[in-house]
Image (cartoon, rainbow, N blue to C red):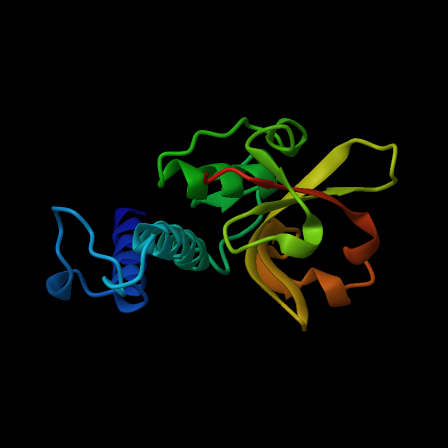
Length: 179
């Protein structure tokens, strides 16, 4: 068991390092410099870059759990349910979420579904008036559709919900919990 946890932690650390900017070549402390010092307002670009970087880190961390089995009420790598998975991922980035998708759907800032970004949460209802029953984390939003990573009956998987006959009609709302 401990060996499995250490293996998973090593894989996550490797993936995080591989897919992030190399810390060896960027300053750790001190003021950030705008990409174009001659351009007024360059600091705004740095904020956008930082937000994009953090979102990528969240997605990369979540991908480290691909294949983890589904477990009802599961909140850790032994097995996750949907809200346990999003809560576990976000907790590792200093964001505390409620324990159920129903309550997570009320946290953070509302986002238009068409404008979701990696790291945002998407919520699902079986009917427009029904309760939220599922949550997924956005991996990518492109003209090919919205890809999410979530813990479903098959375990932690990535899928394009825009192309899914099951998920597409159930898409209800989205929230940004990273801001």
